Image (cartoon, rainbow, N blue to C red; front, side):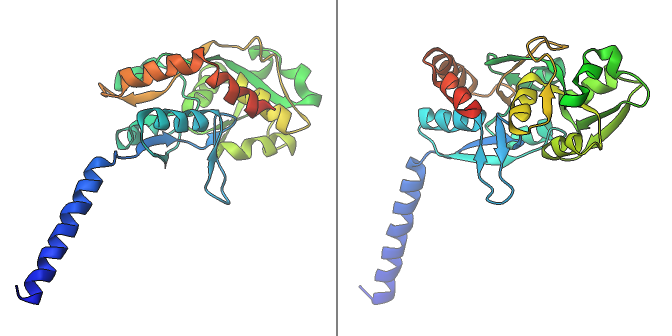
Length: 248
């Protein structure tokens, strides 16, 4: 056999082998996440590494499915637009009727609600919606998502300050650039622990009641498998372990 032909045969065999190996390797589990909502999802701007309760859960889900995991950055404003790029979205996503119309939720894994986050010195001033909904009160919210939706609906008399980056909100409260933030109790409690000087106002009695769940594209073939995995993770203490680690 002439040498060029032999080389061509070897190259073809290598290509077939590579294709075969690739076909036997499951595609990574792609997870849309905002990376700005501690303690559930956080992306370190210096390293790009993700951490948080739902990041740990995502890695556990990928292992359960026998797949690697790839995190896909999104924002609260673009979450529903970005979801078709991903197998699933994870990271403190509230179940809402609008989202349910466009995608499928798993069973809920966390009950929560909106509560004020402010400085310790101002906690007595922001106990009720009526106290917050006054002229001159500066309410800080990140763009997109259910926090700003709550503020627009219930706090029309307050001054709404919109942040393009949720991770910057807490420093703005501490430095006096805003008075109060309405957010989920879990984030309020976490940030109060992380930032001395901030306090979560009555997180056990939030203004609203909602649930967090994982979000999948409509009619995803993964939904049933994710629900089975999630039920087991909630029953066997997996989620509770990640939760305790986040608050330790």
